[in-house]
Image (tube, rainbow, N blue to C red; front, side, top):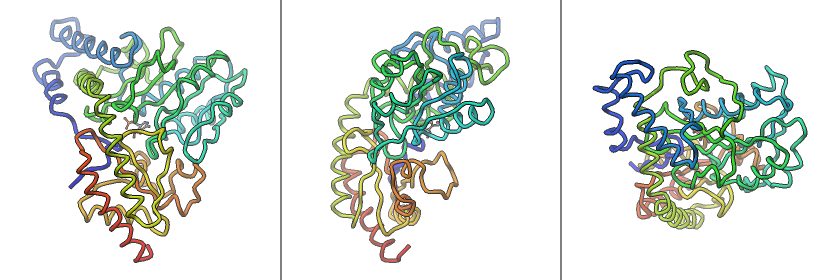
Length: 380
Ligand code: PLP
């Protein structure tokens, strides 16, 4: 079996498991406890925070550990928007992850916000001029993902953040899919908040982090004992934080080499699929895209049927976002790119982790073509 669904989740890396193990067993303390068992956990948490801060190029005090990408997005969007007295308007795009779109929807329904979702082009790119035109005097927050989880398009976030700042508007980016593949220096990106999730880069599910710049006001979403400097209550997931820090250290040390290798392998894979699979079209931007994601539509097929045929051939992939699990709807991302619903339902996404080689991918391309042909012939 070859696993090409890393955008959904990845296996925990051995080094990560070894690093977190002591904090689940002997060193199990609560960082808030006054005794030495607690102090030891507090030191591990502080070290993990410093490592995540080094990865993101920020101060340790600007890192808030969360339960994952969804919570980081919720905290950024609700937390910044509700704390900002400027107004009640949010700017984003229609192709954000559900964690972002549903948080915005909550602000609209419950708190009377208005949202402008600026349309993206057919390649998924947001035009900075269209983005700038949507900013208003009462805009409290702009949020645009760094890389899309379905089609892989990478947005010009540094430019968009600079435009938002010209109007004094804070800017958040969801970097969950970019993590491990693109540099995440928050100063270079110029963002005020950035979300990451551990399970996309070899840490377990259930740990993530939000960078929040300096003294940017933030209304907590989870209330309680005041942990994480009052920004996220709840006993800290010490082992998870150590895992995220370890995965981040490993991923950032190898980021350039991994991205270069995956990009070359991806380009060869895309070319082979386009050549071999009848009617295949690549979705997303041809070059401004994640190194290890390639998504296609296969006209005349059904994406779910192609997935099943691929699985029979030992290839595990996805029809889009696993995060909208169980959803039979056509992908909101492809609809946002302007694909008609019937074509959007033929989508298949391949995404992989750095341990998948160019040779592995080269072997998959003929299986893709075979699966597509089988489904098209059956008229499914
Ligand atoms: N944002 C993006 C772009 C994602 O791809 C995902 C998960 O797939 C999330 C947020 C949610 O992260 P988590 O699964 O850690 O809640």
